Amino acid sequence: MPISTTRRAFLRHGTAIAALALDSPAQQSGQTVPWYRRAYRWGQTNITEKDPVRYDVGWWRGFWKRTEVQAVIINAGGIVAYYPSKYPLHHRAEFLNGRDLFGELTKAAHEDGIFVMARMDSNRTAEDFFRAHPDWFTRDRKGEPYRAADRYITCINSPYYDEYLPDVLREIAGWSKPDGFTDNSWAGLGRDSICYCENCVRKFRKKTGSDLPREANWDDPAYRKWILWNYERRTEVWELNNRTTRAAGGPDCIWSGMMSGSVTGLARSFRDLREVSRRPTSSCSTISAATTIRGSSKTATQGSASTVCSAGTSWRRRAWRCTSRVPDTIGWRASQRPKRACGCSRGSPAAYNRGGTTSARTTKIGACTTLPGQ
Ligand SMILES: [Zn+2]
Image (cartoon, rainbow, N blue to C red; front, side, top):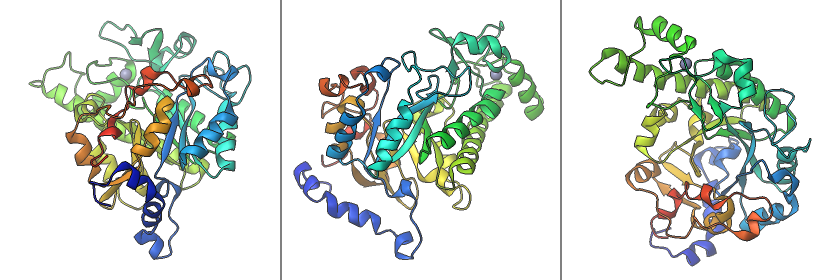
């Protein structure tokens, strides 16, 4: 399809495009194409703690059908659990009241032939968790915990990532059997803050022989080591989570951390897109194959990419606009700033009244709107 194709023509030929997309080399050779390479039109719903008492699953189910999404990203756990987790410190949504909202939505999606990625948000907790495991949390040079509003930020070098989160991933994989996992805040504390917790002090010294840098200073060799060490740790976590979900949910049950479309944004949180995308096609093939970009997902292999859309309340509008196959999307995305030409920032009252997200959330995910030719 030429990039000058109009939106109307794009919609008209959507079915043909989908058919072409499925005619991949893997399919031609008789291999089974995993689900994440067959899902090109995505949706994401952002659930809040207040939603369980009013979430209209039937309405959303109809919405998915009307927008013809092939896969959805649904809040499962992390900061807030939308299912009755057995882990007492896994904070259930304030108004969950025992409801298994994530499980209901996953069941509904599967009944309609829609794939599900369980969304996690895994970098901070409420105070009770901090009190129970104070050594799992980030610390500044004075030893005070880093916080984000009333939440405490977990340290990526702590057992929170090595033990607790894998347990939660296994619980969700066994509970509702989603097709995969994703996480928006998986990379932990960003580059602007150095963590001086006991785990970081010990692990950094063991790895580099140095003490942690005292400040951000590119002339300090310890700071440069600290930067590289942090990138490596995020990639370790990426691999650990994939091993966990694939062992618990099957070989196609991938874990794919969300990645900002901004190169500087990736750098600020040590997210090494190049490294996770260049994994060999053996055991790690599925890791790089479905890198989830904030608000979109793409296949990052074989020279082409499929941008897909998540839009919360603006889903209907964007689900159409953002589904397209764009060669070299990584380079394209990195070179353009998100725009909101199609009005993605505007929320839909109809969706909001049925337990959708707020329009404020959708303003953060507008990268798809600059697809050429639309
Ligand atoms: Zn730390």
